[in-house]
Length: 50
Image (tube, rainbow, N blue to C red; front, top):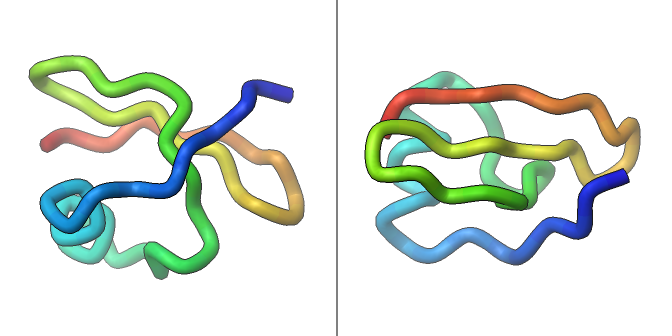
């Protein structure tokens, strides 16, 4: 599993815009055009645009 960090306010807004709950997702890589997320409990991974 990638070690995720808690999302910042701006990242939380991007997660919400992708119809996901920011309380359940951690950011393990932040690129200028996308965020790489890992789920807190299931460890599934997603890439979303910023």
